[in-house]
Image (cartoon, rainbow, N blue to C red; front, side, top):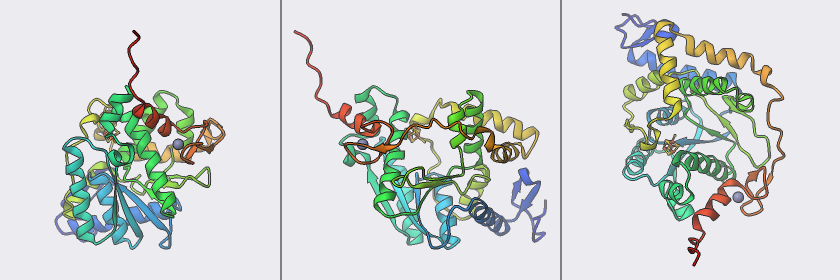
Length: 305
Ligand code: Q46
Ligand code: ZN
């Protein structure tokens, strides 16, 4: 197989576009795709301050690397979830890329913020770790970006993530979620920061190829709590279809974006206000993270005598 651009020997096949590239032409293709997504969705400009949230995995580290190479003003944020072993190893990968690129990386420890790690918070509040983790992550990303004066928060969600989320939302007719599934999610309140996903047309395989070619050291293992997640089942189902009909995932997600108006006015329409404890945005009087914090730090109930 020959590279589509330079006709040298191809090393990466991009089946969704019926193309193949050598290493250096693949990197150019990847960067062009990211740049095109940023412009097509009006995500940000070179003047904007971008907070890219990184987990130590191939997607977020590839995004961070790509945005630096494209000349954007990027600062990275890593949340240390306090998950035994996994968090140390993922934090290490983020520190290594920060050192290599000479770009700023902020580390926020959940244990320092809340007095307890994600698994401990989950145990204390009798919730599943992912429910606690997802809520805390969204809260801290926004809080950090707001306090730091960032214009936008960028995450490493790729096409596989977006197509799987779309399939899940459609299977359960979550019309509110469908209305809000966007690669460029506008801020619906002055204290909410816009969220963007510049990798939304690039598959997980393409992000992996980019990380390998650029010699980005990433954490290959999944979070121990990811096992059994329904999103993995949806990804497998979509990969099965993609195998038989390359390009389906991209057509599925792009088609959804073209028909997004079908889900207009499906948002829950709840009034947004400031949490009476922390000032972050919520729909009740006290936000869910402050409620979680209170529940986790409440003294244990005495058994009835
Ligand atoms: S939500 Fe759940 Fe992830 Fe948090 S606890 Fe791990 S698997 S990291 S994307
Ligand atoms: Zn609050």
